[in-house]
Image (tube, rainbow, N blue to C red):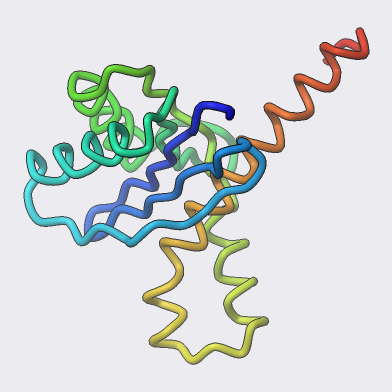
Length: 150
């Protein structure tokens, strides 16, 4: 069994959450957390990290299209730093550019109504974020095993 990864899509109203499967191959969305109070939100995420025995938490970093920091990316970094003090594993920022765009495209194509899409968007976005992370790690392992550079 491969240690799991927990993904967090930080938002001002909601926090999307996903966890990798036991083999570390696929991302599985968890229930979206409605933001109430920072301390409660951090406790909830720390409890999930413990429940799933995760080796790492990744927090989506909403950089600008050009890859620069912005107000939300700084907020996500502050949140990640506070979360790091609550969990026993590393917390890492992960570029989440285009995951929300991709999530909305997927949901639109599903034929789902606007209200259902709105409720599902956070879960789909964080699942895409984690899947990208898992795919990148698998590719890096594959390259390392074959002796091919990055």
